Length: 341
Image (tube, rainbow, N blue to C red):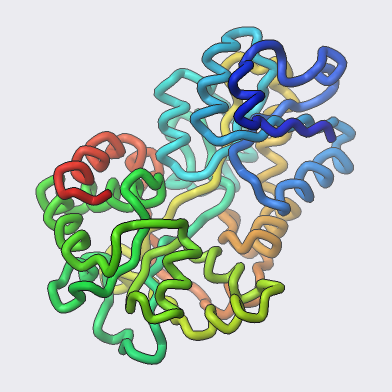
């Protein structure tokens, strides 16, 4: 596997191909905004199964999308991998994907987890959960995302900034369920209840709960599982102080997002790109995502990490992922209006 990391210096150049011409034949060229060790296992397993080499260019989503637009029809990219439906929607809006009609993908991936026109597909699920301090919070006090805006929790909530795509997609789902006005009221309520100015990533929110800086936090579930499995004993101890709530089990279900991919519009190796997408829907790939990166699989019946298994089945919001992207611009405007930094 040939791998290139799009650092700031490389991004500044933004000229020439990410791969040499010799890397283009009999290969699949992936532009990836995922930076997980589990993905290295996926690439190797795909090559072992198909004999097709995998070349990877890593960067953040905005860098990669800008690069593909600049490269145009000369782009070597066959597949773009990223996280969050909001980013997949942005790539779709920029015309970076082409439609794929695959019986394998259509049969194995639920309709809510893929673009209706086959422009992108979700291959892993991440639940945005609420976490609480086991020592000083009774989880029966809170059942839903909406409860986070209740004045009784003033000064108790840790959550990331408004420029975080995970929060943008959560608010996009609130827009779909409650309308823009209702979503804005909720966002204002959360701002009023923040324990601190938003800072750090999802792990920092969980650690804030463990330390007592806040009582409640919002994070994607796998960040919590990573802490439980950490090589650092202090991080494991911190995670054990924290409990997990899957919100809205009495109505629509917990907010779900995806890690996903699409076939690039100007793919040089479209057949190999489709084979890679289909591979991501295989039991082999789904188990890697569920056991190594602690994401929920999109294919039913796949073996998962024991922590995920211990949670059992929970109700998931079945909004089509494309809605999260369509409502993203309004979500950003609402964040600005309520002063969610």
